[in-house]
Amino acid sequence: MSLTALRGSRGARDTRGTRRWTSIGDGPTPTAGRVLTYAVLIGLSIVVLAPVVWAVLSSFKSQSELAQTPPAPLPSSLRTENYTGALSSFDFALYLRNSVIVTVGATLLTVVINTMCAYGLAKYNFRGRNLLFLIVLGTIMIPLQLIFIPVYQMAAQLGLVNSLWGLIIPPAATPTGVFLLRQYMLTIPDELIAAARIDGAGEFRIFTRIVVPLSGAAIAVVTIFSVMWRWNDFLWPLIISQDQSKYTLPVALAQFNSQLVAPFNYILAMSVVSMLPVVIIFLVLQRHIVRGIASTGLK
Amino acid sequence: MTAMARTAPPRTAGPTMPGSGRRGSGHRRRSVKPWNQRLAPYLFVLPNMLIFGLFVIYPAINNFNISLYDSGNGRDFTYVGGSNYQEMLSESEFWSAARHTVIFAVCFVTLTTVVSIGLALLLNQKIKGRAFFRTVFFLPVVISPVVVGLIWGWIFERKNGLLNSLLGGAGLGQPGWLVNSTLAMAVVIFVGLWLHVGFYILIVLAGLQGIDSTYYEAARMDGASGWQQLRLITLPLLRPTTMVVVILSLINGFQAFDYIWTLTGGGPVGGTTLMVQYIYEHAFQSPVQYGAAAAAAVVLFCAVFALTVINYLYNQRKESA
Image (cartoon, rainbow over all chains, first blue to last red; front, side, top):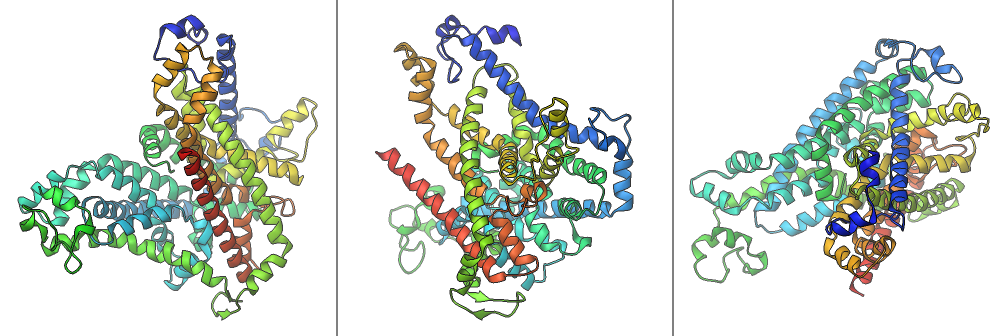
C-alpha cells in the first residue's frame, strides 16, 4: 500500500494528463494528503465494520460473557446455544419461515407484474401511456411512511390484516422496479418485436419469449432489490402482523426487544440470522446492486 | 417502418378513432392496429396499476379525506371538518415530534450531503483498495434497519455497552448516551448517517464520473491548484447530483422510523420521537387518537411534497441563471 500510495507526487500528476485530482487533501504536499486520505478511509471503515463484527462475535458468547466488563473481544468458544436456544424456546423458526414466505412470494409477484407493466409502458403506444408513466414516477415520491393509515384501512377492508397475503400483495407493485425495467426495455430494438409479429407470434408470446429473456440483467437487479426490501421491511409488517403467529423476523426482534420478552443473547443471535442472508447476497451480487442504483438513483 | 408508426406521438391521432386520422403516406395500412395489439398494453399494465391504485394512489388521496373525519374505533366515521387539526395542534406531543423531526432532518441532510461528497471525492482518486472501501461503506445499506438499531442501541448502552466499557477503561467517563435527550438525538443522527451514507456515496460517485476530464486538463494547464479545481470545477458541476442527494436524504430523513424504534424507542421521554412514530403510535397504540394521527400524516405529506418541489424549482432556476 505505502509505496504506490506515496508515489502521488506533483511530477507524476503532471505527466499523466488524464489523471483526475479532486481530493481536498491535494495541497502543496500531496503525500501528506495521501496519508490523510488513507487514515480517514481506514478509520471510517472500522467505524462501519466494528458493530457488525462485534455483533457476530458476541452472538457466540454465553450470557455471562456478554455481561462481563470490560468485554472480552472474542468468545471463549464457538457456542451455538444462543441460536439453538432462540429457535427452541421461542417461535423464531416460525418468524423465519414467515419472512422467507413473504420475501419469496412478494419477489415473485413483483418480478411478474413489474416486468409486465414495464413492457406495456416501454413498447406500446396507447392512450394514457404517458399519464400512467407519470403515475409510476409519482408513486416513487409517496412512501408508505406518509400514507400508512389509509393503506391499512384499505388492507383491512380487503381482509388482508393478519395474513401473509397482506404482507405480500400491497408492497409488490414497486415503482422503482417498473422504472428500472422500463428504462432497460427501451433499449430492446422495436424491429425485433415487429419481426416476431410478422412471424405470427401473439402479444403475450412475444413478451415471454423475446422481451423477458432479453431483460434478464434488469430482472436480476429487481429481484435482488425486492429480496432485500421485503426481508428488511418493518413498518408495514408491524402494522399488518398484529397476531404473533404472523410476525416476520424484524417485527419479532423489535417487539421482543422492546417488551423485554426474549433475553438479549437470543435477540443478538437472531439479529445475525437476519443480517447474514442480505450481507451474503450483497457481497456476491454487488455489481448488479450498484448498477441498479446508478441507473435509477433509488435503492 | 412499423416501428416508426408505433412510436409516433399519440396526439397525431384523430379525435374520433385512435390512429385512424394519422397523416403521412405509406403507414396507412399499418395505422389501424389489430384489436389484440390495442388491448395488450392495458392488460400488461393492469395488475401493477391495480395494486398502485388500491394501495398507493387511492390511499394518498384518501389521506386528506380521513383527516376530516372522526373515528373512535377506526370503523364508524363522522365528519368533523378541521377539528382533527385543532386537536393535533393543541397536542404538545405533536409539536415535540415536529420539532424533533425538523432538527433530525436538518442535521441528517447536512451531514449526509457533506460526508457523502467528501468520501466520494476520496474514493474517486486512484487509490489502493478503492473497491474494498466502497463495499464497506455501502454494506450497512443492505442490513435491516431494525437490526442496525438493536446493535447500536446495545453498543451505546450505559452500563455494559461496548463504547462505555472502552471509554470507562480509558478513564473518560460513561455518558448516558441514550438517557440524555440531546445525546440520544445525536446518536440517532449518527446511526442514520451510518446506515444510509453508503447509498449517497454511490450517487455522488456516479455524478463525479460524469464530469468531463477535459475541464481538469484545462484547469491544470492554467495552473489551478487541487483546491481551486475542487471549488471551481468539481463542486459547481456536481450541483445536479448534490440536488439529488439533498432531496433524497430529505425525504429519507422525514420518514425515519425503523432504526430509531429499536435504538431509542423514541425516548428518552419523546426526545427522539419523530413524526412517523408519532403517527404510528396515535393510530395503532392506545389511547388511539385516529384523527390527530391522520391530520399529522397529511401535514408530513405536504411538508415532504413542498420541500421536494421547492428544492427542484430552486435548482432549476440556479441552473438556467
